Amino acid sequence: MSRPAVRRVAVIGAGPAGAIAIDSLAQEKAFDIIRVFERREDAGGCWIDDGTQPDTLTNFAALANRSADEPVPIPDALPAQAPKLDRPRFSESSVYPYLETNVDFSAMEFSQEPIPADKTKKSIALHGPQTPFRHWTVMQRYVKSLIQRHGYEDFVSYNTTVERVEKVGDEWKVVLRKEGKEKDYWWVEYFDAVVVASGHYWVPYIPPVEGLEEFEKDRPGSVIHSKHFRGRDHFKGKRVVVVGASVSAADIAYDLAHSKTAQLPVHTITIGHTVNGYFGDAAFRHPRIQQHPSIKSVCRKTRTVRLVDGTSIPDVDSIIFGTGYSWTMPFLPQVEIRNNRVPELYQHVVYRRDPTLVFVGAVGAGLTFKIFEWQAVLAARVLSGRAELPSAQAMQEWEENRIAERGDGAKFTVVFPDFEEYFEDVRRLAGEPVDGRGRRLPRFRREWVRSFMEGHELRKDMWERLNRQAKKNLEKEQQAPPKAKF
Image 1 (cartoon, rainbow, N blue to C red):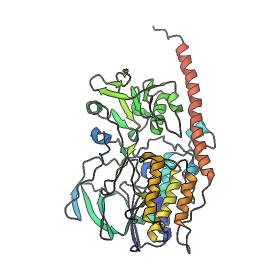
Image 2: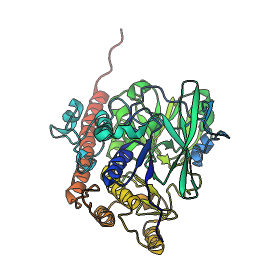
Image 3: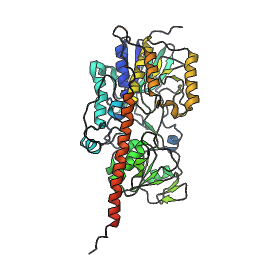
Image 4: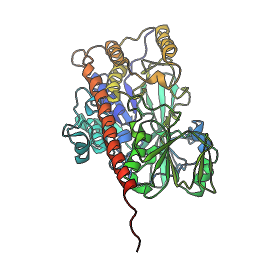
């Protein structure tokens, strides 16, 4: 049975996934209207700067059970002016002043749009003149430049949050809210299709810990997530516990320890936890980092962090959680989120129940920007009617087979190590441009994976090298005679 023609498309998000989705849709030359809604003030997604101090964390129970970002009430009649919302929306980014990419730039850039070769002095000093890492400002400008070309910025409505998306007949009803100084303006627009490119690294996951919220209540700002880290200077002389064994926890703990900014040693909760498969545990083996097992409870009065092995860390000033994110879509309450992933997405892109709802970016880490491009082109081809999807049964079997192989959780969304198979499957589904209509996808190149993996080795080598030097410095300090007192 043929589907109605798609002429009006809404895109949610103007980060990297949204930016490449705009170009893919525009190059199809099949749509009368492309509207992009971005809740932040600019393009860039998680690469946008946040100079203001983040809000303090609240409602730790909801953060722990992944229910913190619930749908908001919508005015009864639209359009409407309504009071500004006063609940957390988790739209702040995880950028801090000296943040740089942790993977090789060539593994991130889109196939037709090179990332500028701007390198910081810090990165050159750490990795040499050919350093493959880029400052966050380079990435933000890169994403923004993709939208500024060809008049695409005319498609985008900034400071506009998509609050509800629901199917009404053959149309998607999209409820929108634009932030004002005193009140917010709410209205409705209708579309034939919706592209979800809103990302899933926004709502912090904080595991349940007895006494944690009370500890934070007594000292607002003493418990943060890694997305709220704004640099080492905020932790001068403080006793810090960093929770998590993956990328953000490693970067923050290492930064605080190697710079000697925080009170030493910096304490990390890593023992018994699985380290990141790409980066390993080299960062946590810094001589000024002390590793511990999981937290049992936190005492608000004594500021003591009690651990599951019976030991404790006294007089703690700050606890930083690098424990990942919860995938939420409060604007699509009818679409299930299960085990921190969105089920029923064929090739992580097409919603099986309704192919006029497509996703770009619904994957785990690894060659992400490039994966976004392949997904965006497939999404655009599906919506234009130029890509033929397999039967409903075949799409269901694809998901069932992947669950059998990887499980029904976060690992389902990770493309590694099957990059080549995935890229080529998506490229074949999308097909080639026809009569100058559509963005062309090149064949997969294994050099992309090589660069990706070599970038990880560079960072691990850096940690090992600096660890050796730090160990020597620490031994010298310990052997030095005490300074005389007069």
